[in-house]
View (tube, protein in one colour):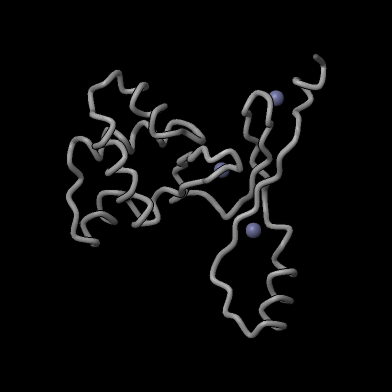
Length: 134
Ligand SMILES: [Zn+2]
Ligand SMILES: [Zn+2]
Ligand SMILES: [Zn+2]
């Protein structure tokens, strides 16, 4: 579904700030709110960027990824499959892992606990090959 249609269905308009943030986040992978703010050269206030991102997260257009060090990164997920990340703790590079390795574990836990599991997040941390050279 097109972003505009999705927003409209949820009762929101695709305003210029929303369009600007969407266009920015769609061109890459994982950005902090500050990355987006700086990338837009201050054409939007930081608060507007945060508020817009929050709305997109609510509408499931964007996912907020909270790293172990507390960094929050946003990624456009409307056209992406469920995936996990490998994060380099030295340079911050993020590698996307295709598919899901924990689905069977999820099923097992659901059975054991009688929970209806609706979601999960898994990030792996390490040192990338590039950083290992130093
Ligand atoms: Zn690295
Ligand atoms: Zn990702
Ligand atoms: Zn998964």
